[in-house]
Amino acid sequence: MAKESKTNAMRILDRNKVSYKVETYDSSEFTDGVHSAEILGHDVERSFKTLVALGKSGEHYVFVIPVAAEVDFKAAAKAVGEKNVELIHVKELTPLTGYVRGGCSPLGMKKQFRTVIDSTARKFDTIYISGGRIGCTIELSPDELIRVVNAEVADLEAR
Image 1 (cartoon, rainbow, N blue to C red):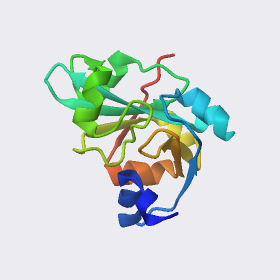
Image 2: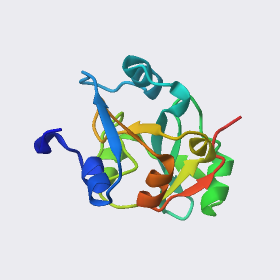
Image 3: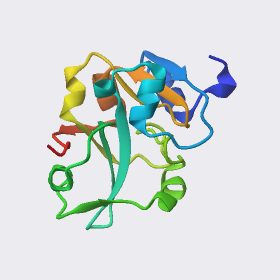
């Protein structure tokens, strides 16, 4: 891949000597994770989305869950020791993280927020996450992602 097309997420993986694959597709606007996975022919169960939430304490958190799932807000709050958490408004995403909706990666945000990854990620050898821009997906080991972002693992998916 040409150096100029690398995202912050890819540079962080390179710095941490993490093996990963990148796939891209043409998209100029937000595409939900399920549709993105289908476009690329990926298993939807192995595809994960990145959500940014605000806790009652005023702290921000990153939750990484399967693209077809909804977050269990009680479980997410419990995982980070908050009374409650709520997703930030989409207009707050870019100023806070540096990423746009549909291209938000748990890697390479402006600030490294406390990150929790849904436990289902560990069922797979590799998972797919956003590569840091719309139309860009990274495949990597969930354990490597957990290591690089210093993530915790918890059951976050609403059942």
